[in-house]
Image 1 (spheres, rainbow, N blue to C red):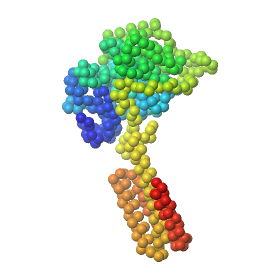
Image 2: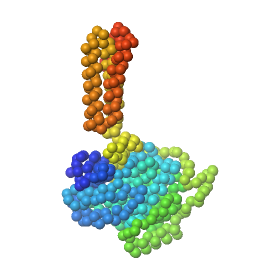
Image 3: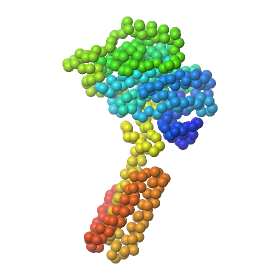
Image 4: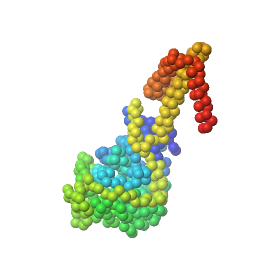
Length: 468
């Protein structure tokens, strides 16, 4: 059942629908303190799976341990009743998929920031013992050029046969690791594979395993190397390591953070990783150190020409052509992927970050039309009142009084109903200006001159209306 805007779900008031994915419908909402949050209402077929909900309820406590600027933290959850939901921090920005589709590949310093931020996000998630399982461009929000990862742990927690049979996609073809496609458990190494695929897409504008049916993409993931043509030279060896077929040969998120010069991620005080998990991770890390093809870049690396630092990389600004087709799974997430988010709190102006939403664009258009109407009608009323002041003073007074009354009512509505102080000030200023302008015109110009000007203005206005 689709939730309606303005409806309350627990203590949260839903403001607007943001989109829908494989597991639920996402809404912008207000918490009891008036702060914006994102509420994901699980789909009915997911809510009906008691096994999946039980697993998710256990995972939520662990997911709450994931805290950091690179992840959208889980704030609350209610998994009982007819409509279970999750609440996360609301992130201002645009999905990476939408940015690449609109602006082309991510280049230069922006690519370095993206790579470092994504690596730090994965390290934060893995430090709490959580596996994202569904890292992809649609789940990376860019805010002021910095990435924030959303929806971590949900796909892994809801990995239930009945949920899968009901139509939810547990991961996205082209970003799922080979071992997951072959039925193995998704571990931290699978997230590293998705990290490599996401960065390959961001840096080239192409999906590294192509497009088409999910089965065809999955076959390429398992049996063919990724398409890394166009990936910058400093990044290509690292992505090649992340996209290796053998999970144990891939680097850990902490290792990638160190290579990119990011901040080390501290583990939370309580983690669900037991001794066996820690031993397996240490063994995988040791094997990677023995077989890795790339190492930490030195402070100054030799390029083709002048020396450059990793943070000051200069790469050709060539943009490879983007694939015209998209995968079926990506199409299912289009409602979320193409969304540009805005953070808002009551009583504060809406930030103008990225493209304005349709509601904001409509509101701006209404403000422009209102301003032009107030100014234009004010000039016309003032001119008409000045022309009629000597022969028909009652008409002049009636025009000014009527115009002033209309503006006074509009100012009251704007001030008390819409809380739009700027519109109210404009109305009051226009009313006072029309009276003052009418007095000035009648004092300095004769009635005949004013009548000629008024006739000319009316003729021009009629001509414009007819031509339109």
